[in-house]
Image 1 (cartoon, rainbow, N blue to C red):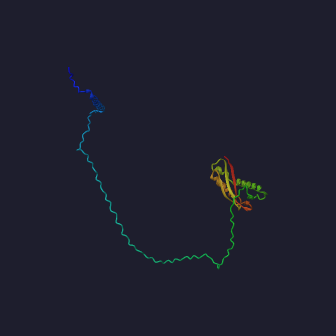
Image 2: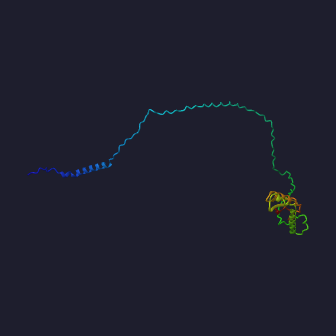
Image 3: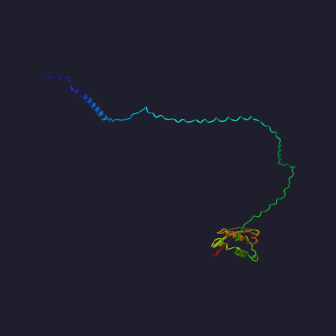
Length: 240
């Protein structure tokens, strides 16, 4: 029996080509299936636009204010040159030369006396060489006794002259202290009185009393009269 198969037909010889084409086709279909997207259809109503009804904007009519034109500039004044006669005679100042020659006489200048100006020097009462002397203390021998005598005399004088009832009239009570500072100048007079107290009325009374002190013999420092500051406390008790 003879075989019907064509000996020249070899199916296996193109199998690799068919396999490659099939594989490529499957990859293409797989990629298309993966990337394929579907969208849900929804009805979108965008409305109806009516172009017939348009809003007509009313533009207000503004009145334009016309500003009046500026006034014309005044006509320029003609330049008039007035010639003024120089009637004032000016005297020229002649500056004389200060240079001298051998024939110039030299004027001798007399000696100028310089007057010494005495300065007001304040020397504290505690260190002055010669203390001021209160009237009645001239008989004291040394400086210490004259100082003590002066302090005693001033205290007695203030106690006699000071109005202690003034504090009650001013509504004050208790112990009152007034600090008084004054100077015994180089002529022996009382100057520069200053008082400090709880009430202006007491300050005024203390100033009045110290101003009544008699004239004293001025204190001296190195043989010259000087100003001597003096401090005096006035203390008293107001009787209730």
